[in-house]
Image (cartoon, rainbow, N blue to C red):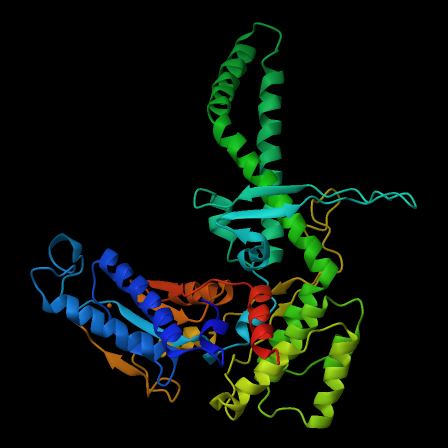
Amino acid sequence: IFPKSINRPDITDTEMETIMDTIVDSLFCFFVTLGAIPIIRCSRGTAAEMVAVKLDKKLRENLRDARNSLFTGDTLGAGQFSFQRPLLVLVDRNIDLATPLHHTWTYQALVHDDFHLNRVNLEESTGTESIPAGARPKKKNKKSYDLTASDKFWQKHKGSPFPEVAESVQQELESYRAQEDEVKRLKSIMGIEGEDEGAISMLSDNTAKLTSAVSSLPELLEKKRLIDLHTNVATAVLEHIKARKLDVYFEYEEKIMSKSTLDKSLLDMISDPDAGTPEDKMRLFLIYYISSTQAPSEIDLEQYKKALTDAGCNLAPLNYIKQWKAFTKMASAPTSYGNTTPKPLGLFSRVMNTGSQFVMEGVKNLVLKQQNLPVTRILDNLMEMKSNPETDDYRYFDPKMLRGMFVVGGGNYIEYQNLIDYIKGKQGKHVLYGCSELFNATQFIKQLSQLGQK
């Protein structure tokens, strides 16, 4: 369920009830499957509160009938009165509209533009072949790749910054080539001539090594398949980064969100014809507008709107964000995103070597610094029972602690990865991230555009 579903000005009470009931039923089924009854916390005066009230009621009604309750017997894993119970935090997407618009830098989030049901669909690179004048451009072939839980490389690196992924693919390729060369070397040694004891001993020793190498051949072939897969996917991602200067956008937006000094004016970024698509420029400006403590003056805003229009941008998303900011507390207290920015380390040392699969020249090697996004910060306050104005007025429901975070109005891989990184430092604790819909920035800005159309 996208934000437009619950933020449309013409939505009826019946439609809103239907949407809320769908979310509540899904959460109820999840906790029945989990076999645990959560403690529920939610923000006040939002769609999240409506969901919390309805879910609390549904859980209470089920527990009241002991004979027909779904939380009894084998299904109740943690025990109805266990001291260790899940904490379900319900938040509304409106608490943070900047993060879903943010250009991403982790592998999984970058791939998400072409990712559906664990499958990524990418166009094959055309290379540097020139097309004769007047000739019809060659149709690009599309290839599909499955990125599943059995893919060890994907599981290990999907949350890593893209430059680290590119380097890891290169290292895996070099490791594979070394193993392949060793098998070839052992095969050539098998042709040793002579029958002295030293030669026989060497032959026997290398025969054992070759036998071991051959026995691991299926594993080696699978490794090669994954290397080829991620080489193709990472190459396609790299082309997107270079073509749209996504590294520049990511770094610039990080500086805006952390209130750091900007090395280039926003107008210059918007007006640069070589820097990204119209959608990229609109996303950048919306992040600036949302994150600003004080909205730009009408004169400045008109100047920005002209630059955006000249760049081919649709201004409808800005119309909605202006309305949203006027009716929320964010106008006087914008969400904080921390005060750290990604650190550029210059160009690669390894992946810039001759023969590398990835020519990273012109792409910044940005290293992410750990900082908690608004959703992660809210979870930390509630899970650790910290007193904070941001969460002190959150409502508490106990219809009868795993930790869970659910976003009403859509989620994204940036928040998901931020929560995963956060919980790594909390020994013995786990976090589950859920949302009414998982969308990428393109899908999100389309919803804002539809909400902002006059």
